[in-house]
Length: 248
Image (tube, rainbow, N blue to C red; front, side, top):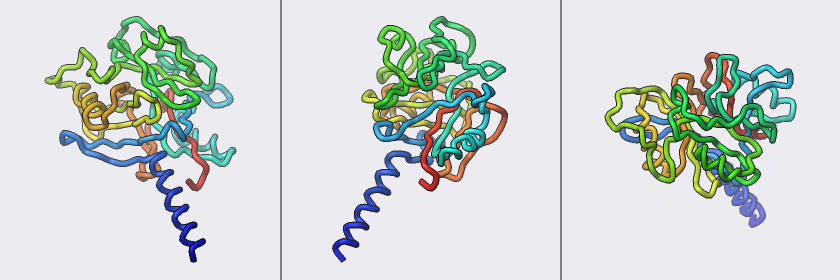
């Protein structure tokens, strides 16, 4: 009986650790509904996906799932992860498993990407960190994978200086925030149209994250089997995902 009790305790502990490692849920802040996926990056290995072995963009969550099936894996979570050109090439820095496929962009340019300061999500062997672009350029952290996007939402606990509290520009938006230690990443997508200022406040004030990066607006999509959700639509460029063994 004691052995059975110990086994049950172990199974409960294991289930709890998996829930912390990847936890997708909905939450409300300032009357806006958000879907978030929280990843324990100290124990889970996030991956970036752009092209299949033939050099063609994966484009869809389902294509990545099909590719992972050969190794007995599936996507536990995925999200579009950065802006791209019409042919799906990344606009800014893109590194996938040590290979740089697009260079770092540091100059002010058009659109949201060029609304400086922008930044990138850096995946290392020990975690994940959102880093402002010039800080990345000057410090050169060792990123096994990275995707650049913009603008930054939160920088060292401060909102992007060009965000307006009374802005009327509202879109469905998605992005990512990380802890300073790099041991936790939270990916969020709004269910309702929000301003940049609202979205940034959500990361800083509701999630307690001092670094956060905008991924995109109109094309924002989420794959979260825990929530029974997998958004479809036109082909995407860079995608971030968490491969997990089938059955997890």
